[in-house]
Amino acid sequence: MANRYLHNVRGLFDTIAPNYDRMNNIISLGTHRHWRKQTMRHIHLNDTAHALDLCCGTGDWTIALAQTISSKGEVIGLDFSAPMLTIAEQKVARAHLQDRVWLRRGNAMHLPFHDNTFDLVTIGFGLRNLPDKPAALAEIYRVLKPGARLVCLETSQPDLPVIKPVWQWYFTKVVPFLGRLFAHQYQEYSYLQETTRHFASYRQLATMFQQAGFQDVHFQRFNFGAAAAHFGTKAVAK
Image 1 (tube, helix red, strand yellow):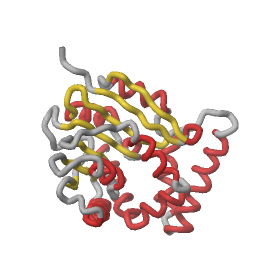
Image 2 (cartoon, rainbow, N blue to C red):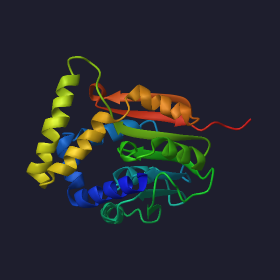
Image 3 (cartoon, rainbow, N blue to C red):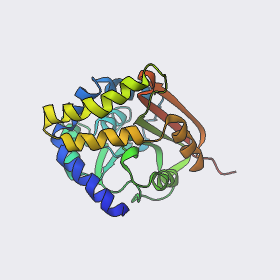
Image 4 (cartoon, rainbow, N blue to C red):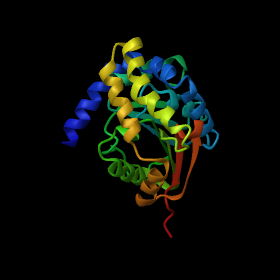
């Protein structure tokens, strides 16, 4: 069942890849870039760091991370969609970062890396699309070095009584309409709004981090709770 679900979701992202960046800008009114920039302020990598950007999509966060390190470090961008990675590869080339960025196709729930490999793992707007989120968090925990951090940027749900109904209306009605209007992909964006609406709340996601073993779990919310960045640290063995 999980494999079929993953196959269907991969097909969806393969389909929307050509319009993905444009639609992100339209749907979020450009605020997704602000969310990532705010999150990056909490990330401090040394020049030789080894980082992993999961569900990297078209590579924006992968590139942002790579711009903070030297060619002695590396950032691996992993995604299950080949068309998404093709676009990411073009962006990396335009940014002249081929000496420190590696793009790889793979499954975030079964990472092809050794234990204790990375100084940082990021995942942006991807966790909600994985059928087994605890498995993905366990894999991330495994490949992080002790003391290293996971940073997850995701859509979330506002809880203010004045904001919540507007947010629900926007995602249930407006987002699919925008998908049809600008990308002729109504069904695809109907699915994406459903994953957003039914994803864990910011408090539930913090609990999932803790259940996976992460310490010092905290979060920062954006746009009245429309998105949130979660942070967790892998325990250091005593």
